[in-house]
Image (tube, rainbow, N blue to C red; front, top):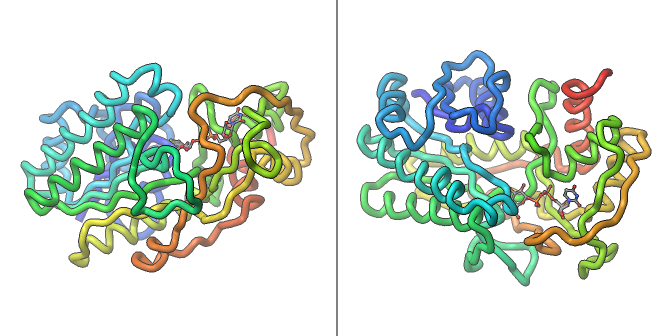
Length: 326
Ligand code: UFG
């Protein structure tokens, strides 16, 4: 019983590998290291392989006697996907097709997939439930929706079962400070705020102050990476126990505006964190909050770290350790 963590060198995949192994699962990591970090993989057996290399993927599945796959490997920036659709459909969608093909060859029938809020596009009614029609607004969201649809088709045709987990805003870091969020270049709100708190940036620009929200800035639903990951193991257990394929939002069902996140970060870090208000960033919906009740009811999922100060505090511990001097 070995689990292949695809994208295990990335932010969320590396946390997943660590958590699964702590829960007694045998973990093997596959990553092409295009955006992930070699030093985030730890001691797991590791294969530097691109998903689009079908024969290489098949060889890893066979050699390591993989019984289930968790798929975290994707390009994931909305703005970049608009500028580089070829890379997004190729890496994400074609990569998934090859992975499913390799799994099919070896009759590996369980896959857990990192999907995203971006599959929904603009939704009027908050919180978002899983059954609203998906109308992605970017190649990124569309590439992930296609990946969900492929899994659905493989289920129907070949009985390969899946759980797609639609993440809202993943944030925070491992409680022991060993892993955290670091992208290059960084585009996400919390790491940029923390960079500013450390003095690695002069100020943070808040994108847009005229949204139809109480303080005029965008509202997002932040979820601690450790809570996010615990849902993956529950999803796998659902499939191992014979459960059907399913789709779940992973979210906290509460929202914080960009200025509220900044205020919380000032409290957590004790730093001034200078900011300026800027123009809106293209493609940002005003509010994204998800209904999380389906995952709680069907997976028995529990949110243990659902406090914005705790989320930012854990991210800060990692950020200081990794980028600053304690
Ligand atoms: N923001 C700023 N200044 C910055 C960076 C971000 O004001 O320097 C704002 C953004 O405009 C947005 C909010 O902070 O209003 C959150 O932005 P992030 O980039 O941190 O996260 P997103 O909500 O854009 O992205 C997340 C996931 C994506 C996913 C997307 C779905 O990281 O993978 O939600 O909409 F696609």
